[in-house]
Amino acid sequence: MDSKGQSVSMFGTEDYYDTIFRQSVKSCDEFMCRFNEEEFFPDLEKNDPQLGQKNFLMLFDYEMAKDKNKDDFLKQVFLFYDAVKTNGTKLKYESKNWYAEQRIMFFFNKKPIELCLILQPDKTPKKLSCWTVVGVNGLEKVGYKDAVDRMAISPEQHEAEFIELESVFKFNSKNFSQFRSYNCHLDALSYFFALVEKGMLVFDKRISTTFHFFDVPSYVFSVNYFNRKKSNTGWLISEYKKVSYDEKESILNKLLSK
Image (cartoon, rainbow, N blue to C red; front, side, top):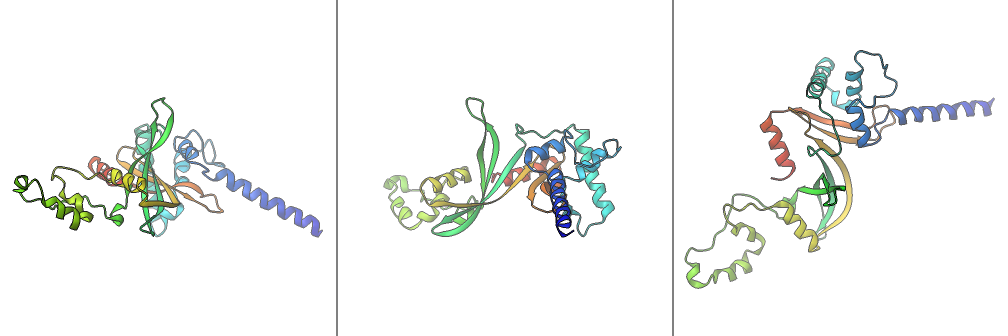
């Protein structure tokens, strides 16, 4: 009897994990398929008139509803769903309206710092799909500044063949970017590439990945990976927000450090 009982227990454990595996959103591609209703959360009734809404709801991290009124939470989620359906939004890899935010640990002057690289789907000259780096966040930790503050060279220096530059380079080298034109933007990505290629910023390890989607009109949302031993696991919506056009542009510019 002990042997039989052990066998049943083992089978039950395997069956449980098989169910969790089927229910989990195992990849970003699978997330897109369920969002697009090309696939559905397993075990939902296919004839249910609310199949779409329930499938959509299962794409959200359940902890987003914590400490919120259940009816209000569901109402807002289903308004989001209605916006997706009304606008016929379909997520796809080739879209220029989604980005990957990769948190990475680096060493700068032998000290660990965390930066966020922003990547976007792209095409090579041979039309092959790839990801390319389009932004970086957190560079203020290594001295990057794109503030309005400026330093200036004396107006008569053209008559002295700009001899003042000698002291500028000697005493203000760490703030030299502040001598740029008032109309010149200091590009964060170029600053980052220079630090990496000069060996001043050294890769340590990846930390986490977040996907940001701007495809749905009037909404922005983010997707993260949740590792749980329950049905609400895998790549799920971790944050969403209803926004105006200007707010969406502002969020995107902040993401890209523009």
